[in-house]
Image (cartoon, rainbow, N blue to C red; front, side, top):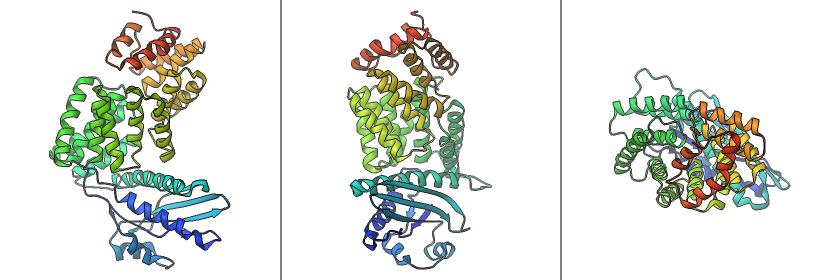
Length: 403
């Protein structure tokens, strides 16, 4: 996992705009250096900007650059400004084969250049990290080691949340631990996968998954105290245990280590909701969506925005977001459950009943109002009040019986 970010080319008519292209290059070099600094293995090796800039305006092929710098990947791009609009293109190239592995284009308004630069570099870093993981996971390996299994598990995770994906990830990470019982990376990602299964409503034994994840997180942080994945997994454990203030502190620590962690932004929004700061949830989810607009788990982010609208009695907005969530992540039961409540409140009883049936088919419970109340008994008082005032009337109209 080694890369050089070549100086982005300024395609604007104004040569003074080179500073913006240089800013993109420098921020990307910094952001990419954080990849791998999460307890999963060696940090991503990134050639310094001072060395990369020596290739500016030189005609050198990527294979030669790879040989000269000893890197596996080369990233290059361009910046073009026209009026108040900026277009940035970026592409990832395999320095061994000269094959183009990934490319994307980003556009924005120059009203706030610093914010635009930050958002563009963040989005590139997030997308590129995913592309690198998928590429590494796809490398043929005759005798896979623990790190190979971790990459494979992460690649499966990029397919989205589902029972089958969780099971496959856990199996791969168990293989990693069988090969290296002290792997902080395997411990961290296994803990995180167990908690994703719990929070996704797909765990057969919620308590067992939480207990195992808590033990794994403790081991990972003891070995790698600055692991962002381990801290994120710890936040997920704390949130599942109802310790929201402590969870918020963990998510904020992750963001201090990696400002582009969309997972931490997403989870922080949920923790803020449960901690009583519901007005802070949607902006955090929207920030995650801006950073990774094609994320495989984006349906979960849409769903949280829909839930907040629903709990704040903005039913039309809730339905719009929850329908987007259902389209993106149809296998998650709670999305169908919240949509059933929203349809019920909107008087669309047939659609509400269909969503209720799908939520139950996927293992989402909703067998009775009494069980829903019991399941929410450990939630904070303010959230229980919102469930009682909004969700339960919606569930009743969808057809959930009292007992």
